[in-house]
Length: 161
Image 1 (cartoon, one colour):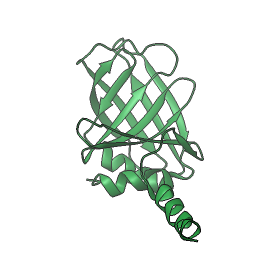
Image 2: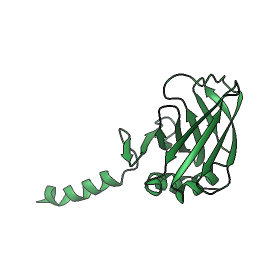
Image 3: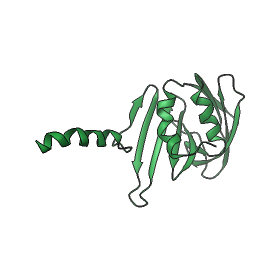
Image 4: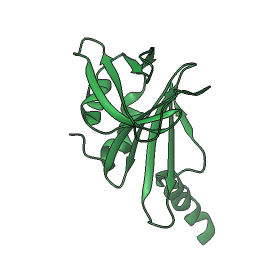
């Protein structure tokens, strides 16, 4: 009798738990969360992949960042070197981002990321133009279906500035 009464409560707790063992998908977005057992901090991520570029928004320790990577191959980035990207959501003016290469195929941006997220919450598509170190630009368009659901946990844990 007690066991039957506790099952719905346990189920509700598992559904409400913000950390998952594997990424989930909400429309075009993948959602992932991991727990750093050393610090006790959670990392929440929402992202999308295309054939040429991937984009992620990550909230860790109340800090929001945007990552851009090449799923197959390399962006030719060098650790710590400056790189740029531009994001344009629908009718909004383009937002220029300056970041650094954190791996050969990954760049991280942290300034103006809250602005980009706010625009994406009200947009239908986002176009990302990434400039590599050789002066080449890769441009991809991302659908923004279900963005409010994908960004919900991020916005709750990281203030959008």
